Amino acid sequence: MMEGMLSSGIEEVRNHRAWFFIWGVLLIVLGCIAVGSSVLATLVSVMLLGWILIFGGVFAVIHGLMRRQWHGHLLNLLAGVLYAVTGLLMVTHTTMAALTLTLLIAMLLIVAGTFRLFVAFSLHLHHRGWVALSGIVAIVLGLMILDAWPVSGLWVIGLFIGIDLIFDGWTEVMLAMVAGRIAPA
Image 1 (tube, helix red, strand yellow):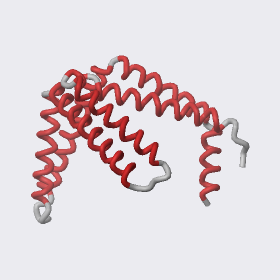
Image 2: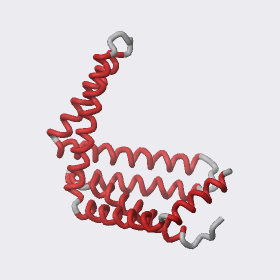
Image 3: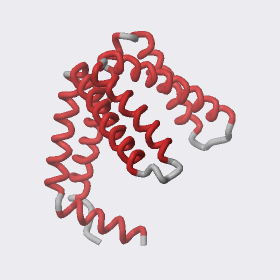
């Protein structure tokens, strides 16, 4: 069954590999723009997240008000207000929100990296070296962000988004190129 799913997926890519290739190139270009304008990409991303939270919060409040008979409506109201206020703060204080999110990303990287190192050295894993390397890289990235913070708060999010877009784009381009070389099922 899995082979059938894979072969039909490859057939789809093969039949439309030009679109996969174009999509990949577009993602690479957008990623390069985001990396080259990482401050702008950071601020736009934080602003977009803020607006998403505002709209989500407003809809949660409306849902809570319309469903007063439901005993969980108060939770909807409170969550909606929290989302909306958080989104409003992000939109009105975009730079501060970017700094705060970047600080959280740095902490996450350090904690996740430490956890990976702990796991790598406490469990008998066949891929222990890769887990340890992943942990070390995460810790180093977190420390680098912290070392440059608060200035790093202005560019890290945009840089990370840009790098992700570039890698995603290369994945699409490579998929399109490889699909053309795989023999039909």
